[in-house]
Image (cartoon, rainbow, N blue to C red; front, side, top):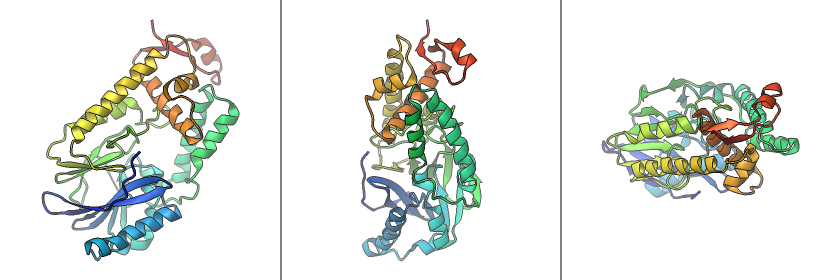
Amino acid sequence: MINDRTMKLHTTSSGIKVYKLPVEAFSDHVTNCYLVLDDKITLIDTGSGMDDSNQNLAECFENLQSEFGEKIGLKDVERVIVTHGHIDHFGGVNFVVEQSDAELGIHELDANVIQHFRERLLGTSTALRHFLNRSGMSADRVDALLQMNKWSKDTFQARKVDFTFDEGPVEGSSLVSHHAPGHCPGQVCMQLDDILFTADHVLSRVTPNQSPESITRYTGVGHYIESLRKIRKLEGVRVALAGHELEMEGWQERIDDTIGFHDGRLEKTFNLLEEPKAMADVSEGLFGKQMNYHILLAMLETGAHLEYLYERGRLLIMNIDEVEADPMVVPMYRQSE
């Protein structure tokens, strides 16, 4: 993933200023936050909430004055909109709201990620453990991956959300929400005149990681591709500003490339299953040997593509009797006859 640490000013067709604030949410992981100078000063996404991330966000506001002459500080933010419920985008909401007393909004399907964080994390962790236990990995590796998945999340404190939205205009704002589930249940692309904030839905170089819907509803490859096709039909968009990497003028072509990428990965997954294999073996066939947290990302991506193929009748579970008798038995997938 390309990390672009350059602040930049964009101006919409109606003259609204939008500043890109590149925040190093984690080491070598930049999240693009955006400051919208609308009737209410609005910050889109907040970074991870880690100390370095918060400091980096504060420095971006200082640079607004030194580089662009904007006399706006964190204390002046009146509204925070979170594009989706992943920690590198919402983790800094407490820092921002405590500095500014801004109102906080997020899509209704991700509101409980912030409001009832421990409960949501417990539910996801339980489903993730079940998923990994059926992957063919050792119990020790499963435990290690689950511990890695909790890193950076243990410090977040739940906070009340002031408003939620779904599809359409965001009340009291010039922003229009386009719900685009797949990467995250409450993922939205926000449109402001001729600018589209794509968050993690469409990125300039990489494709966002996918997870199976068996872990979290409204995720999965099927939802993701459907949402890509929906967003591609939007009209009047001059440039897309993503949650990571670079801006995109050819954003529709990038969507086409992303759909093509997943079509290719689905076929590669299918072709690996002429003989029965466990999910872990399929993952190694797709990604080779991975290390540390990348093992988990590879397993989630593999599981999402297996789920898509299985749900559409292209795969069978060859040991279905054993799986039915014991839910801890590892399913063995193979191409359907």
